Length: 206
Image (tube, rainbow, N blue to C red; front, side):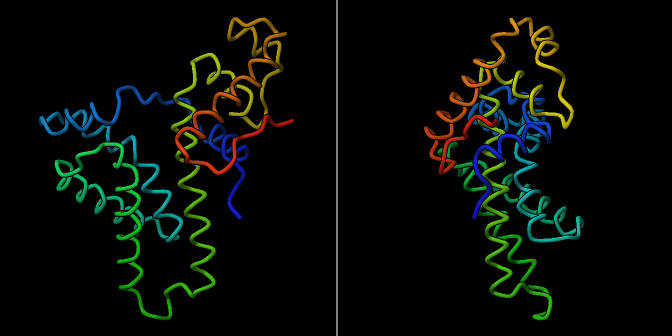
């Protein structure tokens, strides 16, 4: 069973989602990359680094193997960037390439070190959770700044500040913290539902 959407939201916030702004869109970055702009290439790699690494780390305990997969996927992206006509397909393309690279590494292992069928079932669930977590991170970035910052302050720490302090930090009336929190989760659920990326909308945690 995959991780519920609400848990993915809180997990993403606790890992720092919302702290790094996505900035320009994928299609703009890809266009600039094709024009030879090195800064845009770095930004594109940075944007998807966590997705690639998370999938790789679901396969391997050795960070060196995950790093090799990351390098190979980035090389593949550089070689084929011009052929990705629909930038909306960039994320699924990267997922497919990363999974293929991971499988190639596994296939080069001795049979005794390859995952059994039962292990592959668990692996598939771990991969899906990590992909969904990345998609939640991206959805969080599409929230209005006040809603994103409120969720970050409420759930981005194991020891969040009291609501009245958070309200002061955000220049928000304290009685608006609760309704804004609800509004934030509703908006996030709408983004996820529109993209069809998470099976269920995140509920507001108690």
